[in-house]
Every structure is written in structure tokens, then in C-alpha cells.
Image 1 (cartoon, helix red, strand yellow):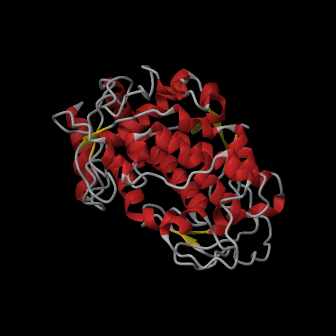
Image 2 (tube, helix red, strand yellow):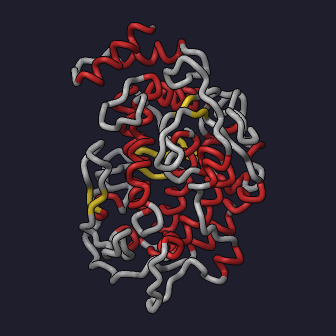
Image 3 (cartoon, rainbow, N blue to C red):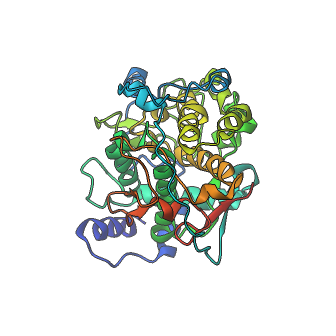
Length: 378
């Protein structure tokens, strides 16, 4: 097994194209113990929670805040502080509608976690472990494995992809890229899962997501997660813009996860304007879910280090898709501004530093279009 994984790492790092057969890699991963310390010889330490608190998501919106539309910015508001940029967007003129995007011939359906079979769950987690066991591409100096290439990308781009109207769009493409890498590099051949957090808002610990069988405890008190299939996982990216070896840690707070509720999601989705809806979504269920799970997930920059990040963002993307489904015009128009204040148009680009091709907003507005080719089971 070690020889197979080592050869894969060397092939990636040296630029050699030939890799072991996918079936061999998956066989190796299946034989690994349930905890993989990210190829480090020793268990990494838990960092003080203050290290994650410094870079936490801010300006969250409760149902009362949403009712008062605190996420909205008046056109006369010229405040350019980071706090204001995080929670509000000055709406740009809506772009002209375009013809409906070509629909792909075989739309994949993302399945909610509770409807996902144990076989599918294990295949998905095995694919994540596959990435964690492979050598990094060499594109990011802080990465120690292929999975951390994804974390490093998010860390590098955080100032550009949070606190502005690109937030939902960039993370939609990032999530698709994650899925595509799982498929192309680790043989993942199932539907991508998403997690309906409205069902367990304020009581995340009861979900099978955070069980011994799957992701391990959410009530870890800021300590290393020592159970589940990511037990003792060592991380090297973050917190913030720094990079220190540390373990996967969580620090559940029910008083915060209560706001991943249907009332918060629906309150944001009642907005007619994309930019205001996106602002509300970012400071709504998105921010509360991150901060409520705590520790690594509380770190705006390095939060993808916790594999539950991708379940959470599939939930946020699903909510965005539900908003689009309310009006067919919403897959053909956009407004809002990027972090530099430039108005978004359908031709505004979304980039992932060449880990996958740069796309235009028009290419990813419709998830059933030819670029993304997916939808959600509800």
C-alpha cells in the first residue's frame, strides 16, 4: 500500500502523468485505518480557540435582523469599512437577460445526507481520504497533500470571495471543482451529498454527520477530534493567513447553529434582489453554521480543512438554487459588486487559480447548464 501511495505522490510532485490505476488507489485507501493524520508522523496539536476567533465570520443575521433588512445597504451609504463590505452590497444595474444556457444531457442529482446510503457515504469519505493521502501539486507552498491544495486556494482568495456579491458564485464553482477532482483523481462515481441543516438547527450533535461512524464529534470543546473517520487529522493551512500544523478541532455552539434554521434560510430567500439575498445568505445560515461548528470551521481562511465544510457549502448552494427556482429569470441575470467595487455582469470571470478553467458568471448561474450539470434532490 505504501509503495502505491508513494508512487502517486512522486508522480504528482514531479509532473509525471502516469498514476496508479484508480482501482488500486481506492483499494489502498479502503485498507487505511479510519484516521489519517495527513501524512504527518505525529498527531498535530490543538490550537487555542483564540487563533480561530481572530478570523471568524462576522456580522451574522438573526431572524429579527433579517426582518429589519440589516443586510441591505442604502445607495447613499459610502462607508467602505470591512464591516460594511462584509454585510452589504451596493446593487449594480441588472444585466440584460441572455438565452437560457444549454442544459446538459445527464444532470447529476445531489442527495441530502440523510437519504445518502452508507455505501455512498463511505465512497465519498474514501475519496476525500484519497486526496488527503496524495502528494500536493506544488502550486501552494503551504500544502502537504492534494486535499490541502483546495484549502490553500480558499485561503489565498478569501479577501476576494467573502463580503461581496461574488461569494455565492465563487463557492458554487469551488464546490463543483472539489467534486470534479474527487471524480477525476480518486474515482468517485456517486452523487455529491449535501446536508439539510434546517432539520437539526441548534442540535447538530444529533446528526449522523457528527457520529463515530462518519465525521466524528462536533462537541469536541475546541480539542482535537479523536473519533470518526477524520480522527486526529493533521492540518497545515491556517488559521488565517498563517500556516501552523494543527489538528482538526471543533467547538460546537447550539446557540449559533440554531440560526441555520428554515426561518433564516427562507427569510433570505424572500429577497427579490440577488445582491441583497447573497449578503443575507452569507451572514445568515452560512456564517452561523461555520461559527457554530467552531474551531477550524470558524476560520474564514482555512475552514475547508474540516471536511464538513463541503457538506455545509452544498447546503448553502442548495439554498441559492432554491432562490433561483422561484423565478426563471434568476439564472440569466446578476447584480451586485465584487470586492473592488466593480459591478458584476454576466461576463465577470470566476477563477480558481487555474486548478480548473476560469469561467464567466453566465456559465455557472444555471447549475443544470453544460458547465456544472447538477441539481439537488429537493
